[in-house]
Image 1 (tube, one colour):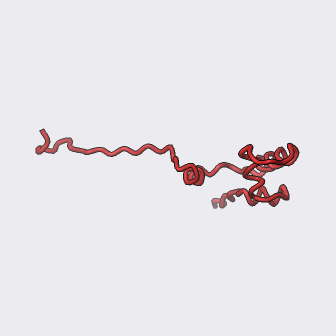
Image 2 (tube, rainbow, N blue to C red):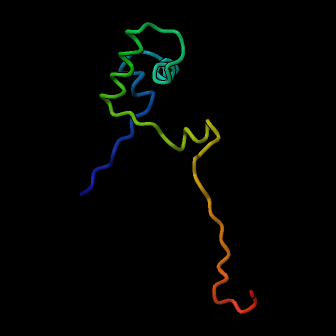
Length: 82
C-alpha cells in the first residue's frame, strides 16, 4: 500500500523556527534584515524538514515557466499539400 507524501510548506518551517512565513521566505531568498543566526536556523530547519521549491508557484510569481511549446502541422501523406 502506497503512503501519501506530505508536502512541507513555508508555514511548516515558520512554526518550527518560531518565525513568520515572511521571515522564512526572506531567509531562504537571502533578502530582508535579520540576524545571521535566524537566517541560518531557518535554512537548516528547511533542509531538515525537506522543504523543496514548488516550480509551479515560482513560475506564477516570476511569470516564467521555462516551458517550451511546440506546434506542428502534421501534413505527412496529405495529398492537398504539395
